[in-house]
Amino acid sequence: MTTMDQITALCKRRGFIYPGSEIYGGFANSYTYGPYGTQLKKNIKNLWWSMFVERREDMVGIDGPILLHPKTWKASGHVDTFNDPMVDCKNCNARHRADHLVESKLDGSADGWSLEKLSNFIEQEQIKCPKCGQREFTDARQFNLMFQTQMAKTGSDSTAYLRPETAQAIFTEYKNVIDTMRVKVPFGIGQIGKAFRNEITPGNFIFRVLEFEQMEIEYFVHPDQWREHFDAWVALMYDWCEIIGLDREKIHELDVEGDALAHYSKKTIDFEYEFPFGIKELYGCAYRTDFDLSNHERESGKKLKWRDPATNEEYTPHVVEPTFGVDRTVLAVLSEAYQEEALEDGSARTVLKLKPVMSPVKVAVLPLMKKDGLPEKAREVLALVQAFGNCEYDQSGNVGKRYRRQDEIGTPVCVTIDYESLDDQAVTVRDRDTMAQERVKIDDLVSYLREKYFL
Ligand code: GAP
Image (cartoon, rainbow, N blue to C red):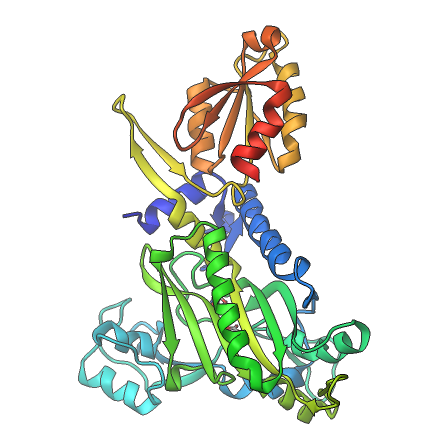
């Protein structure tokens, strides 16, 4: 079983993810995606955009601002209800999620518990502070998760919020999109971008952070047809999980019920994944009804209805929202791919068995020696394989070590150029997973690789 320590160590060692602001001693729960992590994230976002926006006639994409008009968050319900219950330890002042403390003792969820019920349980069960071990806490109170900032421009209120979900920029641009694009309900708007939450207990590496990225779709439908669209999107989310290489067996559906539902949702299916630290939410699909459009219509005074040109029926579309966290996708993909293997010669290797579409480096080109014309030949080969995306040229150190390094970053295939290559115009192709090697003519290399890895 892979551990989080193995994942975080590999991420640091191999330039996927670094702890944030490390030269200043670190800045809690912030992370920098290094060169390979950035490329992996880019692969995820490009694939998502291609599958859900570019290759669908019923979808368009936008790129909205992080700072939206503050009225947006009043209308969306986030100012009043986007809260988590928290307590402070009276001894060490550490701040904790009250429901998480309760759940550490309870075999089940404390979602939807009142503040009073949470406080009573914590006191009765004499729950210890995870930081200092003392048992005295303040009463539970609500903590709004939106980050606030001040605008230089003063007005009656200069407070603005960093968006806690990308979704709202889609709702506020719904009118512009239907006025300017040839969309017809049912249709969707997709967006990828940063979201910010002042989480009380972030943790588990990039699983719960304060600044993260979401890939979200707001899909607008006739109110009578929400269920069929909801089911279709759930099925597509499973397809996505398979395409990025997640094992279907490790994905668990949670039908979120009662008070655990978000304030805007009438039905939500969470996609939970078996992360190394437990089964936790990866994605969600929510039926948001007309909650957002109706509230924005009321708050803005602008009509946000749709008139069906075929039937002349006018209505506020309902919304099905498939939502995908980018950072949790990175973590799930890495957890799934990570393997440590004992080899026949008694040595061991760490390998990321990523699907080629996810791999930060598609092909590594390795001249056996850095002299005698091999680098020049290797660079010719590099130019050919760059057709598949980001490739790497590496001429330093012994070739075995170079293979190990590429295994660790999940490069599906290495191409080695040796002295014979100069005569027979062929190269050695080494497969990451089987470590099998095959001789392939340079003229056939691109079609060979396309067929085997990149179709
Ligand atoms: N617009 C709906 C929405 O924001 P959510 O379940 O609160 O729903 C959607 O968030 C997704 O964003 C989650 O399924 C998860 O993948 C990701 N996410 C949420 N909070 C996160 C955090 N603090 N750190 C990293 N990812 C987070």
